[in-house]
Image 1 (cartoon, rainbow, N blue to C red):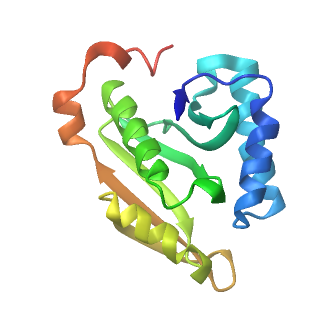
Image 2 (image 1 turned 90 degrees about the vertical axis):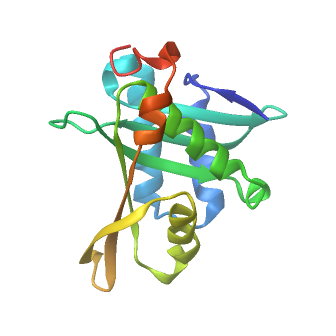
Length: 174
């Protein structure tokens, strides 16, 4: 598995294919995932979106997208983490999450927030976040639609922040 941290011109379409292949996301959600990648291509780091791309044999196996939350001192959102179904259950999601957390901490981030649906389809997603050390902070009932609440998870990054190297110290400002 090869990991990279830049977006290339083919990535928005690769992200579209990967997100669609999971069967989890509505078409408008897939469009948003693509839009974030296109924004990064157009505006670079000023977009506020940072990516970790995992590839195997020139195929996008998974990716994570995260960025600082405006009007906060050191909080970040994990906007997307998705793994191609062929690569699920093999630790790639955990690897992407660990790398994202390390990069966030090295950039001075102290808390990561993740939002997800309360639909039963997302039970494995919520279990994944909890196994990664995220704690359910709030549930907004009927947020996405009637019967589809928004679950908000958070993880403090004090361990990473104390042990972060300077390699990524300019991530927020690059």
